[in-house]
Image 1 (spheres, rainbow, N blue to C red):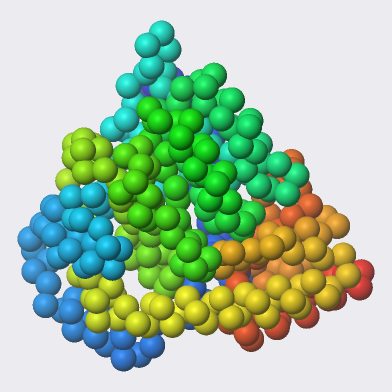
Image 2 (image 1 turned 45 degrees about the vertical axis):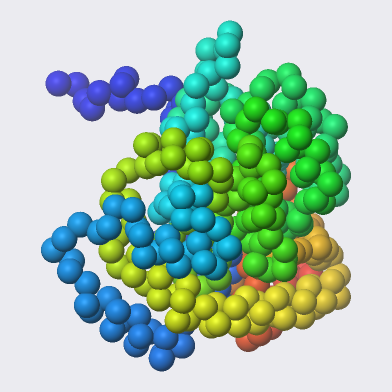
Amino acid sequence: MSGPPLAICGEALAALRAYHTPPEPAPIKLDANESPWPLPEAARRRLAEALAELPLHRYPDGAASELRAALAARLGARGDELLLGVGSDEVIGVLMAAFDRPRPGAARPTVLYPTPTFVMYPITSRVQGFTPIEVPLDDAFDLDVDATCAAIRAHRPNLVFLASPNNPTGNAFDEDALAAVVAEADDALVVIDEAYAPFAGRSLGDWVDRHPNVGVMSTLSKIGLAGLRVGWIRMHPALAHEAEKARPPYNLSLPAQRAATVALTELAGLLDETVAAIVEAREALGAALARIEGVRPCPSRANFFLVEVPDGAAWQAGLLARGVQVRHFASVPRLSRHLRITVGTPEENGRLVEALEALSAGAIG
């Protein structure tokens, strides 16, 4: 045998790169949009008690009934409106597996999203055999409604993904703009990705009741529980029923289900306090960034800033040399002079600002 049978790999994989994270994070890790604060000791003890009771020799509840009820109560939703997944990443994949029927006359189904946006929309669409349609955001990183609606008419996507607040730009899209897209895509599922909505103080969850073609997706990953990998989408029960057929069995582990349930019930106030603390730190950091010469933070409604600097790659390396890890989108030409910086603790933000001030003064490297 001459080697592994790579000829059987999907054609789409040739154009993709695997999603990698740094193996050894820097002392100040501001690149993944996580909460900078660990859970308090009392909360960790309560979770440890809850997890110690679990029958790990058994499969988890396949319907995640306990978690589903807790999540529905927090969202003001019905349990049968929810599809649960291993983070929103798996939810995206399940949606594409479920709603993949090509339109009449088309060889493949189509998915549409603005750019730049969350990297898993293009990656998952290509892996799942969808034709991706990308519509650039305007110069202010806002939704180009006319171009988006024109693309919907031309390509008739099965799925439309709109992250609001958007990652990596940080801005929330205007509700009238979102409503126009929802109206245009009346025979598609329009997914409003609200992973960062807690930091914006706004949710469009009730749009599911008003628009049968709208799903609202979110996650626990940004508000202090990234390690649990729990995400969901709320959508019309008929759509949720069909998508359930494509969900892997027992996809949410028993520890994740129990810990998330405790977090959404007993520890719900702590999650809200974490969000409030991050928003407060965001406002202070934004003001500090705006005072640094050569640094221009974009307005943010999320837990991070997209920051324009003279040279994105050089400044990312300069920050890393000073122990601060941020994200640079080297493969996105439009963002070559930008860094995405997660809001950290006040102490971490202070170190970040000091490092940026040194780079601004010309001390690259």
